[in-house]
Image 1: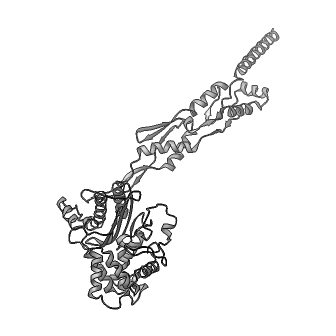
Image 2: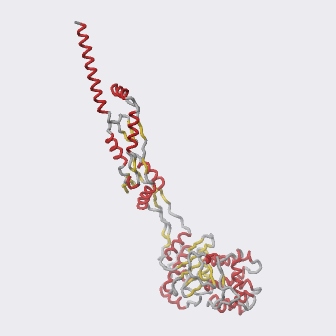
Image 3: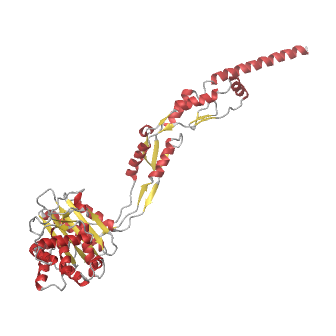
Length: 500
């Protein structure tokens, strides 16, 4: 009886065991189309999922938009497709399947039955994107949210300073790194813009350059400006190396060369030549001063010496080939080739007989300024040939030029301006030294309309005046000049000296 019971029990156990194994086999068979529990593809757990479900899970995560936040506000969403993002889901899933199927079927079944976790299967992400497109998307967002620091400005109406303001801008390189990471992350699809605090720019001569460029933006012709801070050496250069007509502004060089040629103080006649050239812009007197420079009654030789000495001083873009109101002679050059006019990037159609640049005239005025103080290049290049007293005499001479429509118009009465103006039918300019309470400076300004035969002073003069006033207010921002009342405009027009 006992043996029978044992046999029945054994048969029952075997039957139950077989049934269990058959049931587990059924479950194992059903699980064959699913990934093992420890399978991770592209950082997405796909264990227990079918191939289609795993594909959907991966694509759902990686094709979701990346949200960009500016603080608590969502600034934008980037769709992966818009930045060329593509993920090779099929290859990754095929690799996971291959790893799982490497093991013998019966071993996989045994592990399944006894509940032993299989070796983890981890497949790294395989994806790519267009980094340029991603950068462009970020730039569009950053351009919208950035608030760059604002530099101080000269207010055109009052001449007062508008203080600079600090700002915040996107750290684009760091944010781009974060965007890349989010694009390749299945979970963290949020990126916070990384911002940088920008301090307000300091007050410097760029403020003046910006103010002048705004003035020139209202002029549809050509503008050339050179300003030199005689205390610091800082400069404003706007088309300052472009060849332009020298006009009567070149008479500044005639003054310097004529005084250098004199061995004694000027005679009354010579002094009258200086005065009429400076204050009335007399071309006849200027040509007679060329005789002084030449040491003979030969204006062409005087022009040649003037050109040679300008080049000797380093002003290689300045020359006078033909004297004022003169004609070409066969024995003399009718023009010169200079670095500025040889291959011009901007062609102002300058007078072929006499040319210069804003830099050349500005440099000559700076030399004259320092010479009058007993230092600088003129005294070094011409020791014993020109003196401090002669340079001061030239400065004082040009202070008597009361042409007030350009540089002098932009400074208060009582501020000494040693300058020489010049204009033609389609060019208006002025150059000089301003001795202002806030600091001395050299200024050269010229406006031209090369494509026209005429430039109206009603168009050019207001711009040139405002440039001169902006320069004065930059150097005297504690006590800016608000400008002249309208009635003074008419008075200054009435005393405007003619010239070319």
